Image 1 (cartoon, rainbow over the protein chains, first blue to last red):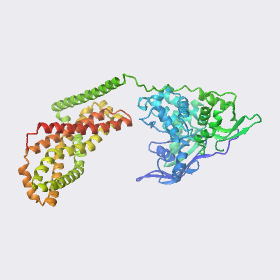
Image 2 (cartoon, rainbow over the protein chains, first blue to last red; image 1 turned 90 degrees about the vertical axis):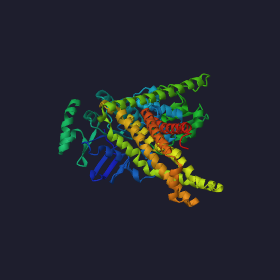
Image 3 (spheres, chains in turn cyan, blue; image 1 turned 30 degrees about the horizontal axis):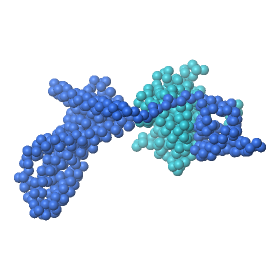
Amino acid sequence: MSTPAPRPICEIHKLWTVFGRNIIHQDLELTINAGEVVSLVGGSGSGKTTLLRHIVGLTQPTRGEVLLFGKNLHAMDRVPQQRLMNRLGMLFQQGALFSALSVFDNIAFPLRELRQFNEATIRQLVLHKLSLVEMEPDAGNRLPSQLSGGMIKRVALARALALEPELLLLDEPTAGLDPERSENFVELIKQIKHALGLTVIFVTHDLDTLVSLSDKVAVLADQRIVANCSLQELGHIDHPFVQNFFQGIRVRLERTG
Amino acid sequence: MAAASFQVEHNSQGNKHVTLYGQWSLRDLDNDFAQLRKALKPYFADNTVQWDITHVEQLDTAGAAVLQNGWGSHLDDKVTLTDQQRALFTSLADIPQLPPAKAFSLDSLRLITNAGRLTIFLSSHIADFVKLLGLLVLELAYLLRRPQDFPWREFSANIYKSGITALPVTALLGFMIGIAMSFLMATQLRTFGADIFIVNILGLAVIRELGPILMAVLIAGRSGSAMAAQIGVMRVTEEIDALATMGISRILRVVLPKVLGLTFIAPFLVIWTSVWALLGGAISANIELGLGFRFFFEYLATVVQPVNITLGLIKGLMFGFIVAIMACHFGLRIKPNTESLSRSTTSSVVTAITCVILIDASFAILTSSIGV
């Protein structure tokens, strides 16, 4: 099978993040290609979530630039910027569902904002997304406060997928779920990734999720990316944090074969 | 990769043949499905049109849903498509429909059911309110037995937040109202040659009525809303539950310091507001009527009986209590969503101000023979 030339979706060049006197990122470089599932790992407070927020344009790095689909979000006009943002979907750690809107309206929200579809089409698309995340259609009438943690994650995923994005960002996708649910959720993301051909960047602390979901691992340590390679190749990288981390995942790698 | 487009051909029998090209998906940012749907509308309506979508480069559910919506629910022979595309359409068609929302009906019982609902709603409010009052009394009784448990830190924090930081704004408002009232009265009184009575009217009005009311309206808007929102967010983030699991009474730690703090500081705020209003009035009277400051305040002491100050202070106590207890009552009823948060915060302010004015009116009638 011939592999097509890698198409970069997200490129980060010489990125610095400084909070007060704290340097979080220093000359950070990272490239993520289309079709990859990349997990971002690193110790607590190493700036994983901050990096994720830089990528989606919520925050601006102190120095350096983030290119999404080859464009710098912060250097764009408002309308093209908005359209470019539609090509990515983000799943927040707590779901970040609009608490005043029902599940149905939450998923319909980005579709309605687009102003291209009539209500009948929107309804069909919302119900399709609900079935994609394996939720019953009558859950659509409920409010986010009436959902369990796992269901909130599913609805949030459905909302992130509403506009069929190319890039999906997940912040701790399985945090707060019990092992069985988190396994199911990972399976779900894998299925959707397969069905829709997504590029996925995610942050996690859960090693099981990491091993079963990611093709590549980007390790954040010493304020930069010290490794960006497949799980197996991590063993060859000479860095104390990476070695330590690899010990943790080796057992799991052997178990899954 | 090209944006979604279509071509129409007429064959020899006069039948139309529509062929779709390009990317029928949301990923192509140049696509506008609303325009495509409008352009395709005449062909959707015509049942004899033959469709060919095998040349489409990429079809996602959004594109498919738009097409299916135009064609009607079932695909028949009129569409040529690949197996993969057929699977997509079948999966879209298989989606169960949302149970229809309850139709809006105008039955004759609606008025009665609405009245019933309103009654239940109001009685639940009253029940909750009485419960809150009862809990407060119980906590006070508990504190009498164990005075060392009194939440001093929260109490003083509330005094600072809702009392001390309110000083500039109450002073400014009192001062401005004093100036405005005195200005308007001066021109009226001068026509009757009754200049001197400005001291009587202004003194009585400010000390007895305006001071307490101005203070109550300001702290209801300022501190009452903040208290309701704070308790609401503490409920949403389960902070109140966290307190309960530590064996700490939420009434003792959250509600009581707010109620006591505001009740305690409110009379002082009344004095503060009244003093500034009188000062504003004196300045205005000095400019308009030429009354000296020394004369104004000496004469004020002789014409306004001290009992009026007591009445103003009692009102201050009551209003402070009402604003704080309303804020806590509505704050504790907030449900974990943004809509409920805003509604309850608004209700707490509106109800507090309404109650304050109602009580002020009845108080004025009851005490009409005292001090005038």
